[in-house]
Length: 485
Figure: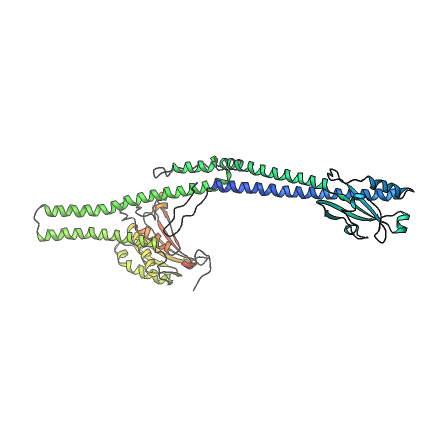
């Protein structure tokens, strides 16, 4: 888990924290946010419940006063109750303060200790049945104005002004708030170490994954990780890594095979040239003998030049796949041109060249003729006298064009077909030599440059068919659009 990345010239280094740190921070934040939301919800519900209890207490007192005033000596009893209410400085319990006023707002009777604290003007207006909070001298009060329903009070227009000291409620809310803050701080302090422990244990499979990858070297490309050893969430990553290792192993093997064949192809003509030169220099030769040696060397030079030319073409094909001159080609005309070039060679070998079908496709004329020439040349080399080579073209239902070269030669065994288009892969059949093994690789490269493909079918003793698949248009092949004219 890296802590920083190296900076490039002119670009300041940017610090990158580890995955474990980032996950731990997110874990802590989620715990704190979750606890805070729950604590706030609980706190507001407690405050709501306490406020509702104060309102219910006020309503209960109002009901009691109304019931008391309904009795013959109710007013005297109310006066005694009001006189007994002492607020005091250390109000440890809820203090109920009451006042009865007449229609003009004059005080009929009240609690002595509310006169300087809760004047009549701070209470809700007559007819307003809602409770109101009021702060006086550092204390909160819940105030209410209620209509008195006994006959005497109704006749005189009396109404009740009642208030409750919320000191005990505020104290209880403060205690709740303190506990919630302490619990929140404790949860935060607990979340810090626990989050790192949980994250470290959760990321342990990544450490095992990293250790397993470190054991893979150039000599152990066949190593595959066991999917069952890792959690389900990592299975796609492991499967992708194993697939990548399989591709790397295959590419490495093909590269080794390619390097060995390339060295062999270049070493053989060079050794021949060196041997001929040593023989020529071993003693004096006549002019005719020198000419014969030079002619033999020229053949080897041509072989080297052909190999180098093909390798250069394949190298350009790997890096310049879009540098083509696409045009609409008539398959019949192009095939006739190439067949006409091979007609003399085929006639000399006693082989019949047959052209069938007609279709149009998009392609590079020069590259197409080179690919078709390689296929016809191979077919002539492996078809005995009296055989036939049929070049056919047809258009598929999706607009793609197929050009097939079928011979009646010796055929190829099925185990060779998957590697037939690999570079330097050669199949020897009978007395025929398979050349440099680059002809079919060039055909495959040309088809890839056209965004097409090539396939081969063969039956030993009956012949081989190689088919070129050209898309509707090379630039649109992968998009799957319709033909462009």
